[in-house]
Amino acid sequence: MATRPEPSEMGRVAGELALRLIDDSDADHEQHIVLPTTLIPRTTTAPPPGTSGERDT
Image (cartoon, rainbow, N blue to C red; front, top):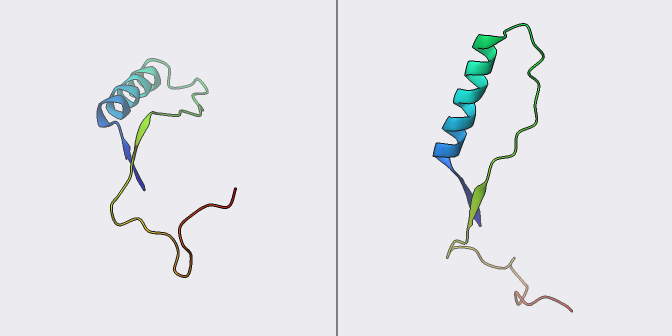
């Protein structure tokens, strides 16, 4: 599995943050930002060696 970030959303958020810093450089701008990503299943993903790949239920 792999993840792919959304470049347009990252750019939009980065631009907004840059403008806020320019507008008020003395303010505390520490934030935790979570952006959407897309999960991409890959065909090369396989179960670990020595397992059948089935889950115990």
